[in-house]
Length: 120
Image (cartoon, rainbow, N blue to C red; front, side, top):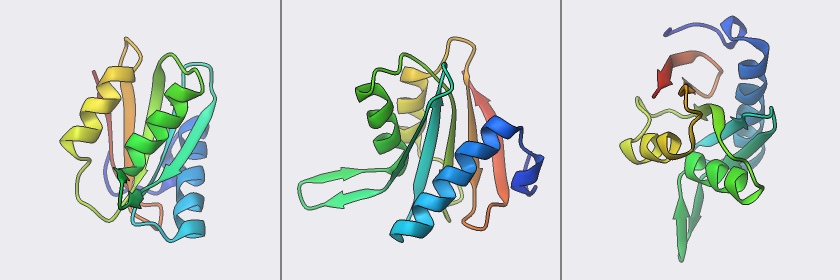
């Protein structure tokens, strides 16, 4: 799916898109992300760019989930102006994705869905 409104997403996926968009708007970060674990809990983060620590928004969201005890993740969303999800971010998602795979949603800042795919 590409170039669709976020309204085309299922309600649980729409929730994490909305959370990620709100975090980006609130902080002014370059990117934001949200992940949902296999129990339905959501974790939201933005890009971390400190002199001593740099994390992408997806890496930060995954770190929050893992440090909160999430076993596996079912879905992830990235709000970005970039044209792709980085290979490193995809690798992190594969490490914690559910055995059946993880849904990865990339939107632009206005909420237009740029891509949705299952990552095995």
